[in-house]
Image (cartoon, rainbow, N blue to C red):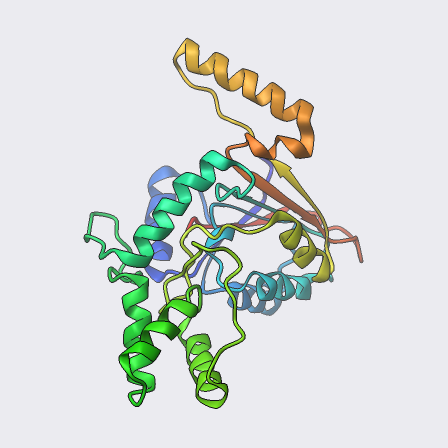
Length: 279
């Protein structure tokens, strides 16, 4: 595709090891593998004087705990001109997608998960609600069961450090100011890994703009199937999405965030890109 340099970035060390083996087996060279979150990526690019042209991912955005901080960190790279293209299946404007994802969120919040092949060890198998109860009881053993239950339910969607801040606020004021942005959104309290974070697209666009990027959020397309019937149906849906433009989000299988940085210097002679892994 003409991309001279490919950088793979993943927060999970096991996946970083795996992708090295896979790239060698497939004969697809990875020039750099950066294990860590976005701040580690930014530091790596600066330390190695790498100027990038694109950062791209699919099904990553909906797992990032602090989306605002993520884009602010990327804005530190504004000395080079690059484009961000993030696609996500957590399309809050598609009612069918929302029904499917809400069920997954409810299961993650209340059910103990079975350890299956492919499970990432960094992700808890406990229900997220029970994890928060345990964290709160350990951090504030003086609280009674009713208060622990109330706080555990009210801190849905928070990582441990933020849960503890809410507990401190509860100790001082008898309540907390945090409110969930969606009734079923939830995350792993240990890692902050969201379970299919359903985000309002207007809010998301404003977050990206606030970080200093121009942004467009657009509907994705369906891929083609082998069977004639399904291929015909997806072709019709794709035509409708194209005609409806932004309003096509209601039937789109995913959405795409496309953000640009204005040119602030000479464009690098060799194109380079960062690939974020899924989850």
